[in-house]
Image 1 (cartoon, rainbow, N blue to C red):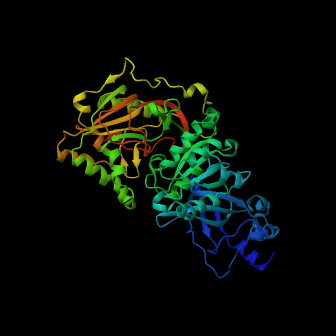
Image 2 (cartoon, rainbow, N blue to C red):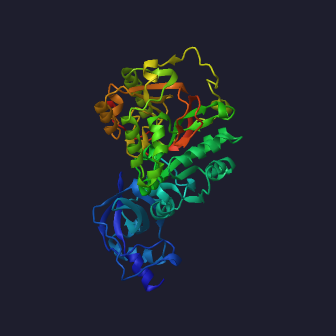
Image 3 (tube, rainbow, N blue to C red):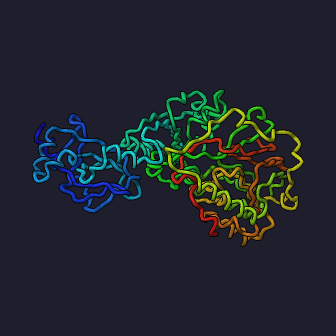
Length: 516
């Protein structure tokens, strides 16, 4: 061992293990930490590293990796330092390099520190203990397929991945492969043809379009039951719309989302199945939303200001709504909760069920999906089932906003469906009316970020298990998960707990709906 290597090994702090994390007892040096591989040591005696203050605790949820440092000289050094405790030398001489996600500005970045652990004789293997506690709700061995849309996020997706996401993934020593999409529909083809045995998670470094493609690529596979049982779909926010990340990871920051996909437990969520005459033999899956009216047209009508990012959504919606443009239609629904009182009760009961569900990854078991789980209860037809209810034509002939969805957030700062839950077996449906006054309409629009618009008396908010929308105008827009679909009648129903995703608290983010 060289002099530099010996110096590096001796630049360590003393630490112990607590219930919450690794507690730094004292910091003997603040030099750049080393790796456990003598050939990989990159130590510069003149280069200062970072300083972790004494009594600091590195929480397990920030620990990315732990590696033992094994050098013959360590035993001798430890022996001399513990001459009065010779009987404990062997059990206390545990030197580890800890890699963790540390906050830097608004982001996370990986850092390393070398620590000597004492007072942990009851732990057989300190390194294994730390890794187990750090990944207690997930798996250290997750394998990821990262699909990047290089055009996402105003063309910044690649840069965001390289600078914010990849360093976190590499520091964790997880396995991941990266594919960049080259054209529309490429992600669908990737999911359709991929070897599902190689990966546990498909992480979409994109907006909401790539998760939609991946979902439908898996849906078109001959072995789709096996694919949906095996593979989770998640999002790394690199687009203009990052609804899945906001809903499941509670963040639109790529570095925090990278940590979330490493640490979060698996969650099964309902998926919406969409049918239209144009593709009735091959229905399409939707994870996020379907929209008609002011919001649907807001997207296409603001393409010329796409460069402003997510703000164009609010501008477009405000412009259409305040113009009082009507989008008449017929809407048939099968209700689960019709009134807002019914909706509150439904939300409370199903949230309680979800909170009682175990989040212990080791005990968490998901049923193996079967082919019949993909069967539709209400196949597409020109007629509707007898137990469906037609919404009052006084409302539907004056529709301004028609929005159906499954996630509380439809964009990073837009909490459109505050009562949405991952697996309550329903679709949230919101309708607004052009007859609402301008002042009340403005109040609704200004409260979209907080979700309180949903409880205003002028907003119709319900939960349905299925619906049919029949537009009554000749030309407009119909969007599903942000993608433009044929402008014709649309029928949608829920497919319970079909898709596996990752969510940091074993549910969607808490919207505070109960206290609204």
